[in-house]
Length: 260
Length: 147
Image (cartoon, rainbow over all chains, first blue to last red; front, side, top):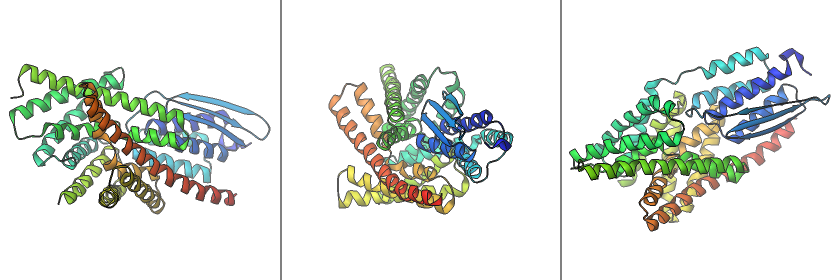
């Protein structure tokens, strides 16, 4: 019993808040489980029963005197991967494990990190560089890279304004890839020397769930089977949506004959 | 020449993704260099061993070790370095081609790219898990001694 840090229910609630935030900003399942485990013990639990999958968190905190508290979370919205926040939360959890802080301060700290805004400049600049870099990496020339970079700006814009309106990511990816596909085909029609496939591959790099696919396989291999399969199936579905979107765009542009 | 072009563009691409993922500035250059290192190992692997699976596996192992070492030196979670470092290996384009040929009902090409995609994804994941297992075995023991 360590009443000095606050009520146990509140402590568990804050630990869950942090776990949920970490999970939705791209932390791996086993890291989140580990963090919850350590934090709980630091705050006086004799045992922690933690079950985390990509969409849900379930934790039971057990104490020396036999009491148990169970709380759970449904993790629905997956936010953009944010390494800055991940690093900050990680540091916070380490600090708490060394020297637990009072529960209201913990809450404030978690919120303070959550509210850090990712500068839009970085998102745009990062997408343009990433897309142009990988477009040329896969064999495009400098012109292809520049065109791909321009379409990366469009993708960012769509992510900012369209994503929230879409019921889920599949719909968003369908629309986004269709719009970009039409744009790329038209530009390539006007300017014959471009490699359409390389430009598309570059732009796909920011949309395609390649990291999710790899992480899914990794999760399965290290024992987080359910999370791994969830990620894998999502990744395949999203990749399928992208493919359908781009195919539809190519087909329509060819059909209408505006690709030169 | 081709190799150098790939290494440079991989560096640029990795910096781009570091910014996109909001990596702190003090990590960006080192993380992107991890990507270059990974790709260099992969290229060397192709020349020495050949195929896709083993070069990717070795490159994945190197990337994970790189991530773990830098994480300890720079006091940050290893994932930050790892995700950026394996980016060049991530089978994004082949995953796209798989689905795209599937949509066009070109099953042979779909199967070919599907196989390639799985080889990449499996090899990276196995590489990561191997290193993870070794590190856990080391550090679990040390943690117990701490208590």
